[in-house]
Length: 196
Image (tube, rainbow, N blue to C red; front, side, top):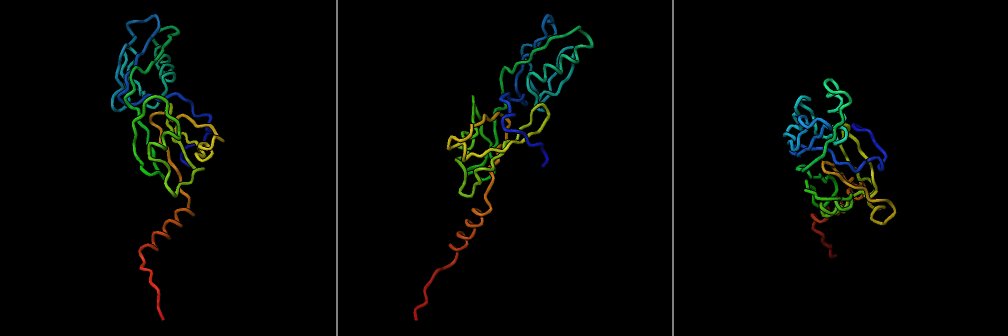
């Protein structure tokens, strides 16, 4: 596996910063170093006075604040920094795999895994409901967590929150896929009866 598997509960509900988001950066007691509104460029970077350029995309606001604070220690004693996402332009999720209509979907507000799958018109007939993966990049770390959307829809498991930038992949059942292929193949044959 290319990314480390994590406990599903470890997927925190903190949306990562994305390209074209707008940030507020506050350096406490240093108003000349604070920035009320700075855009994240298309490559995911921001430029700040004195501190310079930072890669912001994929990081949480807290992680970026810590990184800015560490760099400002070259110039200031114990700098305190806060970062807030003023406007998130990158509010999209990708739903792929065994769903009726895979694609990239814009999201607003809180979206759960079942709601995200519903945006793709639900699982297909060959979906393996107990193998649904959420891929997430946060603070430069790639993670994946496995969920059972069948159990979630029956109320036997919690419905996790999906964050902008996440990719959801619904697995397919090998047996269901084989059965579908057989039945589709049979439709192409002309069925006739031999009369003696």
